Image (cartoon, rainbow, N blue to C red; front, top):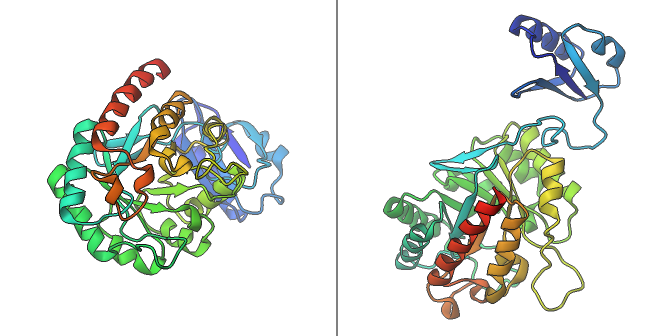
Length: 333
């Protein structure tokens, strides 16, 4: 349920209403906008008298939310959420460029790539230390050592680091990682999502291979309902009957998610296509449809990459793409 308060409502009157609502057994989330203060009521609202609440002189309107997701619902929080990571901002008109290799392979590799993507315009460095692979025989990542190498690259460049976490048991290892990524295969790992909700770190949540937008938002809801509102949604392509690309990039997900939710939405054209030569076109399309950022795989030697070399851009290709993205952003803005 959404309760919108009138602009002239005093803090005392607002606090009195919130106290009464909590006494009725519901949680109250407060969102202060430019013109209205929104109270989002979460829990069993069937016992609340909507007409009684609406008759209060400080209440502008009362509406029930039909969607099962509440915290990430734009009705609940009309203004765009802006997630801040160091000097970088994502959402609310701020565009975040995240780039780096699929997996961390060595200190020289990750530092070289980090310097190159920063020079090109990236604000955050991605790199996998724990790698969920379809085959148990494929490279699984350097794990804790990989995270330490990412920290070295951060010290060299100043770029905040983004890396995928696969298990809540590994949370202590990620204490000094700036953004925790939940991969497509873990989008509905609800125990992990609840644990991440108890942290104070930004969470980059990728859409599952065959999951609907509602399911993606419900996964975000697990994180937010547990107390962490710093969630970034990521469209990374879904499984369809297409047999020419790794996945199918659902570009319509970006404006649809913006309509449904206040959370920032970024796009991963690397995993969506699996083909380096068409990553730039998909990245430009995502930018044109008002994505809040991109996460792109970049490798200094793709033919010899230990993971996903076929979809990785070379540093000079990434630099060229960044120039085009900046031009498109001027038009979109």
